[in-house]
Image 1 (cartoon, rainbow, N blue to C red):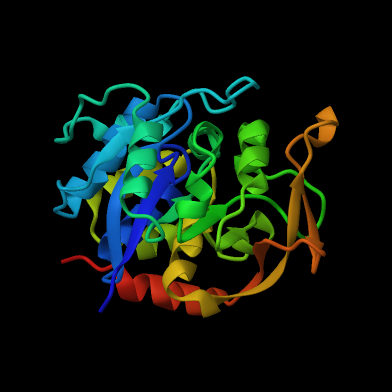
Image 2 (cartoon, rainbow, N blue to C red):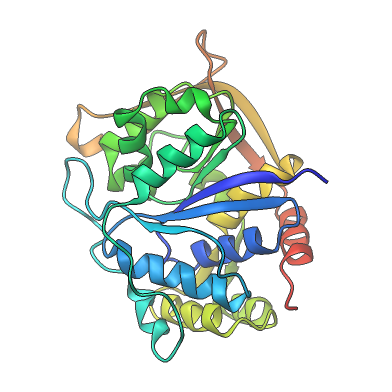
Length: 292
């Protein structure tokens, strides 16, 4: 079985879905997790969390790099990584130098041209900087999968809004396979706090369970935004898609980072998910992520 080489760019440490996505990639037998980069406020803490999750699964071999803590232009909306408190009493790597993510991404993609799929499940600062600093990189990727945007109506989505200028850079890039899952689709994979506790805690990963509890002090539900985005790399028919073009608003302040979707545009180089089969996704996710 040929494995798919994946680079994961994540803002793990706020919503629980980043950790659930990482668990999926660590268990997916078709995934070669080439490395992890972190983005947003306290990126070093986020790198520590990623390392601790990997260790809980018995993986200490995956390169992890801390990335950009602030957006390219606008102020940071995510200053802290609240789930960092779950690290207390656990073993994890602490010596993450600042801002090594973009160099790591660049070197890794250039070392394996046409092979790497880049999975972005947080704000796009690292990826935007990567594409701006080395404009050839998009053409060297096998694919780019993003949990970003909203495509059923012109309304802002969190990952896009945190760094709108990086979002625009990324959506202007030409990648052979440029696929986005917007929150208009990912919100269809949402469960209550009770259901989340039942299904996630049954997996038996104590750190992830503690991270879940931190999340549930602020919200009463879990949405599988990021695990869904990862899953369609390996099981694409969980979703249905349309081709077209995405344009990102940068001129009107109150609409900043709105992702405008034009299906079947004359110059169509984006693909977006337009629907999902939630049951099929849940069945797939929990068939892959198991303890032991």
